[in-house]
Image 1 (tube, rainbow, N blue to C red):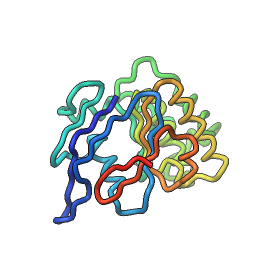
Image 2 (image 1 turned 180 degrees about the vertical axis):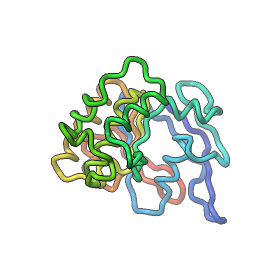
Image 3 (image 1 turned 135 degrees about the vertical axis):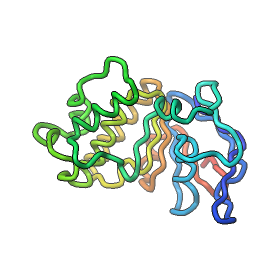
Image 4 (image 1 turned 90 degrees about the horizontal axis):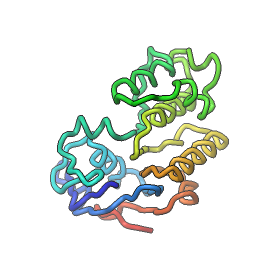
Length: 209
């Protein structure tokens, strides 16, 4: 589904990624683990079209990723910083996202929030009134609502307790079983248990563990 070829990236004369090539298949969970500062988030930014490539190429469903705006609208990204609109409710955040991505026949925003345990009156509160864990679950619900074939997640359980982390992992497994391609960066080693492939980044290269 996603093919990257010879991606390299440098910042302030420091090589972050060097000639990284990899194919990420549909119906699989791919998790990248490793220490902070090795280039995991940079890698996600590049493959999601949030950062311009310095070298190399990316293909999505056999098509070269040249139109970044179009590409971003075809994928779901769960930001570590969440990127919710704080003065809007969870329901409104999801509605705006599905409208921007032109999702065909989406389910009600409430149904996606219910899946991640954001229920009842919480759905109508402003996002800035929610706890960090609640906001993270809203961000995950928003990604689900986009119904993309490729889901990219940066530390998706970083602010969640054990019960909610387990719920999110179950959701990821269900998405995998539905044929989605899921790429995760996480410090949470529990993701290794549900992943089909586990990688680390070492010396600028993506290495299969």
